[in-house]
Length: 417
Ligand SMILES: CC(=O)N[C@H]1[C@@H](OP(=O)(O)OP(=O)(O)OC[C@H]2O[C@@H](n3ccc(=O)[nH]c3=O)[C@H](O)[C@@H]2O)O[C@H](CO)[C@@H](O)[C@@H]1O
Ligand SMILES: C=C(OP(=O)(O)O)C(=O)O
Image 1 (cartoon, rainbow, N blue to C red):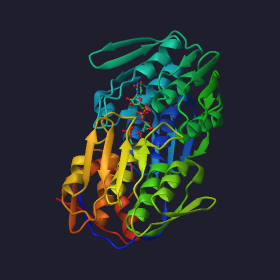
Image 2 (cartoon, protein in one colour; image 1 turned 90 degrees about the vertical axis):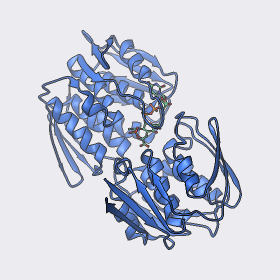
Image 3 (cartoon, helix red, strand yellow; image 1 turned 60 degrees about the vertical axis):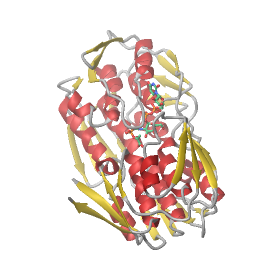
Image 4 (cartoon, rainbow, N blue to C red; image 1 turned 30 degrees about the vertical axis):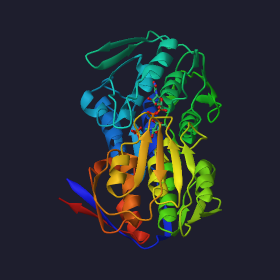
């Protein structure tokens, strides 16, 4: 098992190219199951989660080839509709194959994704959507089995704008008979990218990016070529890296519109932010100013950047508050930050952060993907060595984070234990 060793670093400076979005490409790979023929995806990030999703599609019988940033899928001949525990337990997004399999083959059996470090993460809203379209759902021995004679378009109101449920229902509806309307749908940019992809393969999805999405079912879909949007969460993490190290970083390959909540907060904490057409420059202040953050579905502040922002606020000049409203257990990194000398107290959904003057390098554990990124950011400004273990979490979502930070001047390396 390897760990990441971070030493106190100089202000990070230079350009960093942002990779394709993990949370866009995973549902899009699932959606390739809807199409006959070959689909070519460009700008695909070389991440552990992308390899897991590729393996899952191969298990189902699809041909998948991943070279550089191009992923080619031919899902014309699917040989099984079952996703086993071994593959689903590696990554919750595996459950996104249920909608497309059900739509195309009227049958699907997927291991129930369990909870994870950040919360219980039920799938009731996904299933509510499939049932409304006419599927029978059975739960047995840890598996969810869905069967339908045919899927019929329906009006579905989501109790919460779940990203995954919105995606799974869009994919199921793409090949259903008639029209599906999703109300209180998630509005994240990744939903828009999925809808664009489905339209490129011949589908009819309207309204993605708003809270009402209308999908008109089509009888069959054909492969196409699509370029994945840049990763706004990876981008936000490098923006915090500039802020916390008093650095000056230009992010290339970003869509500034997707980063509005992050830019607004960074300006509040004292950063200078310059927006280009496909780039953003962030210049960190001498000392971070305190602020409050409340995570919300898009276009609110994203929960996936809550831990990196908290790491930054832990060294602010004053007190901040972070309220996590999306996942019930996303403060797992707090004890680790406190081990590094941060002063953070949790009260229910809120974390009260007393800014400290400095952090101390320690042995810490990456409890989840973004918690791991937060610890790397803290390590960049902590006195001494920070040794972060369980780094496979970080590798799920950041392409070559050690290489990209090193290019910006960070003192960071992977050490094989
Ligand atoms: C692969 C991917 O894209 N992951 C992202 C996706 O996760 P994911 O799609 O799992 O997140 P959701 O939007 O579905 O979850 C948001 C909240 O809704 C709850 N819920 C969800 C579904 C359901 O059927 N019932 C239910 O109660 C969840 O427990 C959670 O509290 O969106 C999250 C919210 O922006 C991000 O943090 C994740 O990075
Ligand atoms: C929570 C995340 O991902 P996942 O939904 O794949 O666990 C994330 O990207 O921060």
